[in-house]
Amino acid sequence: MGCCESIFLTETHPEKVQTQQPPPPYVEPPPSIGPNTTPGDMVSSFSEFSLSDLKAATDNFSSNFIVSESGEKAPNIVYKGRLQNRKWIAVKKFTKVAWPDAKQFVEEASGVGKLRHPRFANLIGYCCDGDERLLVAEFMPNDTLAKHLFHWENQTIEWAMRLRVAYYIAEALEYCTTKGRALYHDLNAYRVLFDEGGDPRLSCFGLMKNSRDGKSYSTNLAYTPPEYLKNGRVTPESVIYSFGTVLLDLLSGKHIPPSHALDLIRGKNIILLMDSHLEGKFSTEDATVVVNLASQCLQYEPRDRPNTEDLVSTLAPLQTKPEVPSYVMLGIEKQEDAAIAPIAPIAPIAPITPQRPLSSMGEACSRIDLTAIHQILIMTHYRDDEGTNELSFQEWTQQMRDMLEARKRGDFAFRDKNFKAAIDCYSQFIDVGTMVSPTVFARRSLCYLLCDQPDAALRDAMQAQCVYPDWPTAFYMQSVALAKLDMQKDAIDMLNEAAALEEKRQRGGR
Image 1 (cartoon, one colour):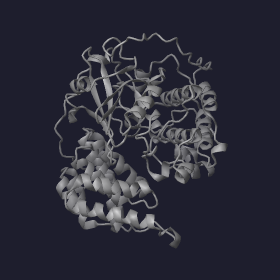
Image 2 (image 1 turned 30 degrees about the horizontal axis):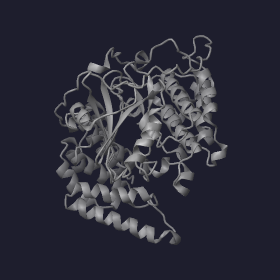
Image 3 (image 1 turned 180 degrees about the vertical axis):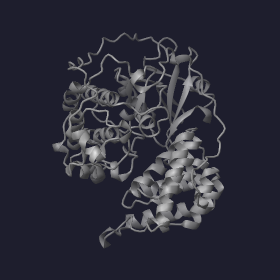
Image 4 (image 1 turned 90 degrees about the horizontal axis):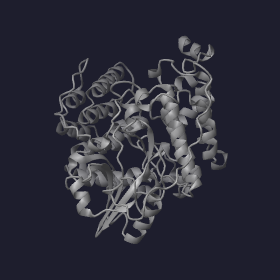
């Protein structure tokens, strides 16, 4: 601990070789898109796509083309696809239940489609055909900030690149504000994408709610702006709060609850907040600025938070390597033509080899035996949820009873192997947010795995860890999801961490 503290006390600044001038603000270029531009002419125009074109681009919405998905009642799935002109696109697929009014969907999409900025993965079109509701955006080939921060395979993101991500996203939010669209829904590390040159961009999908009347936040209760919990409405100040959670991700390299981070900040334990994988290679002065900015963004009262102009002006002077391309700092190869990038083949999933003896749960996870995991979770039931919720008498409302009834229905569906129904029921329980249950997250994670949705499974397993940080099952479920995502090194690391936690529990821990 003494060595860690000395990093801050000595005020070394390995990122600062010389004083840099802040980069000039982005100036929007004049529009160059003609009224008759079609998808085949220019992929960055905004157009109406036919359903047949999008089916052809995505191989009839093949599961092999899915890049992310959400398992709510009305699932919103994102596919990648290739147009006839060889350009790659991202297609977000809604259902009629989400947007029953076709006119309203088109008007909302058209409003988002008017925005054009290099800090966005821009919306380039929509499709509204019968019951189908689809958005079409520029495709970003270099994954999400979440993957680069939480599940990196080659190298972690260096400090200067993290500052660039924060600055670019702040610029994107400031642009939205100036264009009268200050509401961005569910800003998180999964919404930040990297283009073919490694530059961070904000997904345009967050400018549109998941449905006409749907929730604006899908994250865990711990990461949701407090005012949204009160009235269910997202405001410009709510977006600033969510930006603060992204700053925490960039600082720590982990998805940690804001309340925990604020406790560290108030206790001046900033070093405990910083990502150990940076190995001290960051400017302490700049880190303090970012920590203070995150703390301001996460203030309980919306009026106490900064605005988007403040974000940009605070982060601009911290850009110390403007001449270094983003792909260099990310440690990736620049893709000269993302339009013709091949689809990576799906590799066979190999068992995970641990470093130490495993429990029956560990053995099942190392073999990626989903059937065995299912049986173990049924037998364990909710034994590990003790102490995660303390409810007053007043909280036992009709809503609470309805929520527990939804969980009960989910348990029946889970036991009967009706995994899609279990996802729906568990989602009803989670969305209310009055109670948090690591077991429900673990069960829904397994349901997602059995429905071939490893991204969603990984998110749930991570949420289980947030609720119960030392729970081996949460780590085991993450290891299986990572293996399904062909991230073997991370899967092995997570499996070993779970086994270590189990060993600790056997020696007397919880």
